[in-house]
Image (cartoon, rainbow, N blue to C red; front, side):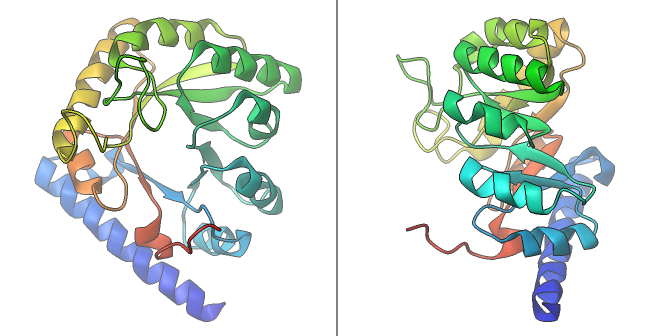
Length: 239
């Protein structure tokens, strides 16, 4: 355990240095960017170590991993984010522990989240996942709502009992005009965030950037970066 704590502390320090350097280069204060550590496939013991090292925001993308981990760490001062594609049949479980759902991308999911949040008397923060690679279907390869669907979906979330519209999230697309152009993609997300805040001024959160492209996200203006492997190491392959 001591070795693992040393490893995580060293990795965390490197990521913190990367974020600080990126902030300085962009003329931003370090406190403008919040680090969310994505702990998928790693055990609750790692979450406990990270909490002891000062991490306060953690994320998961699979409910079957997240639910038992969140329960095992319920005594820790953590904010839990759900960042994966979310099926409506998992909403009851996810609302039980997630403070923020970053992957809201369709009206049916909004209705399910609202119903469950009201039932358990919780307020759940919501980020609209934006698909910058959305095709004719209006959805991206990894989920998300097309840019022209943001306004309608945002209004739904804002009006839904038990939900709070916090902002936007994206994953740098692998296809389409922004493939391989992470900073341009994140810049587009920032433009969309500016548009959103005209009608929903409290929706200030912009979640973008991961281990490989956090610098580009910070340069574009992201308020939150989601970092997994750079902190926890290369994940074992899921069977």
